[in-house]
Image (cartoon, rainbow, N blue to C red; front, top):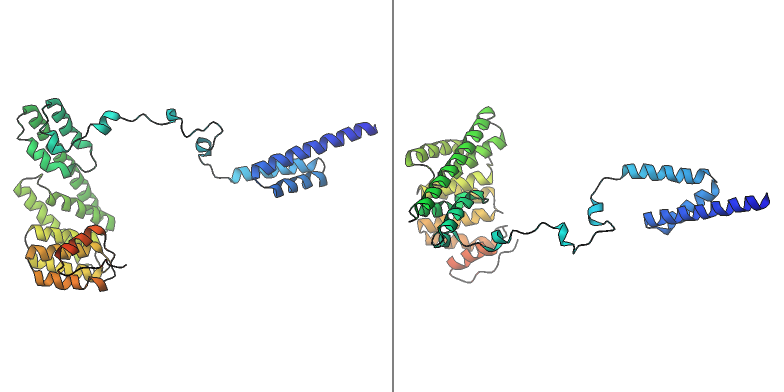
Length: 307
């Protein structure tokens, strides 16, 4: 009987040691293993059950993640079967749109024109589509016409949705911003004929005037209106908006660039030099692109602006 009791005690000690080792490895702490072993020895029989209960509670509190995908035993970062095969034709067979329209392969021209509808900003390629309308290949010209009509349809859909949303809640900031952005994009392109663009411009100006009456209108509203005023060659109004822009947003780099643009359009060299001389005292951080403008227009050497 005594030998049987010793055997049971030895097996229990081995069991407790195995449990403690498992918990220590799982927790990554020897202290956790020693504490588990002490609990099992102090509470024979009940100790392992208590540890199991704690482990279940801790497992329920853990947030689910994706560790099985990146820390699994079979994970191998060099296993290319886990990666999607690249589309080599789409990645390597790319040329600028202007050059694509001169390629002798007519099928390539047509495909290049239609793929413009899938790019992030197809309106940026509208001039290229306009040139494609005069392509000697009739089918390429037809595809360009279809692409332009599709762009016009998408923009009109965006305008209608934004206008409907704004009419339902004209005081909602997000609805106003969406409607203003759609109108601004429409008047900046030549997708529409002159009469339609004139009507869209009138709508934009009416909405912009309303938004600019706020004590501190959104930065995009002021910037967009400056660009529209420059497009319409209303330079005095553009200069007034620039002055307000710089006052409301002294830390804005875009305001600096708008002021430089207005001075260049009005050919006001004295005002441009005076403004560039104040840049050192403005709380604005200029990027290399804007600094290139400053260095190009400033007469003396310009030190990089500090934040």
